[in-house]
Length: 198
Image 1 (cartoon, rainbow, N blue to C red):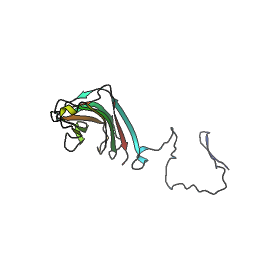
Image 2 (cartoon, helix red, strand yellow; image 1 turned 135 degrees about the horizontal axis):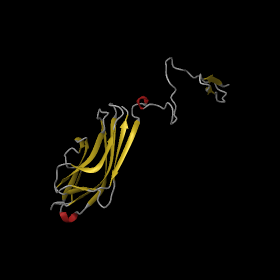
Image 3 (cartoon, rainbow, N blue to C red; image 1 turned 90 degrees about the vertical axis):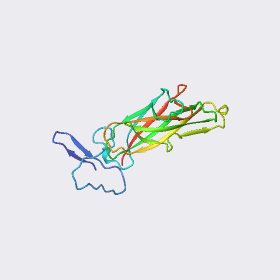
Image 4 (tube, rainbow, N blue to C red; image 1 turned 135 degrees about the vertical axis):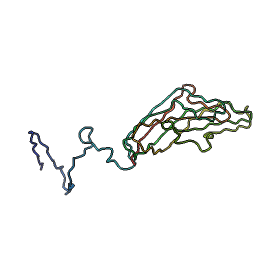
């Protein structure tokens, strides 16, 4: 049996009961409120009501622009791999996922070369490998045993910015003895930023 509620503006809302042989109870809260639906219009579930760990938004950016360090350049230099996100809540965390196309080359006479990786948020470091330049290290005994080493580097980091302002995350690289480059030979690197409810 359906129940029809009449609106003061001549419309109506019908509450319909599904066909069932079982008994169910729908308990309404003793509070003022609005019905939340799963539709794409109307009163959808607000982000603030989602549980801890929910993904609130996702931003992705890519770049094929090459970036190269100098020889034994310990300074972290910015690459073109960056993305900007504006958190909806100051308590949110930002999960940073990076897939960087890296090449290290020009080892010294002992065959040593390496690179370091860092993530900067609005110009300040939020993550870097512990030693500062050993994100990836090769020792091939002599330079004749090594040429160009290409690899895909995955980096994951969960940041707690405590902000609702725009945040720009930039992937940076440095070098140890040899050189480091991002995106050689037309490769593409990816950065994904995910706002996580906390």
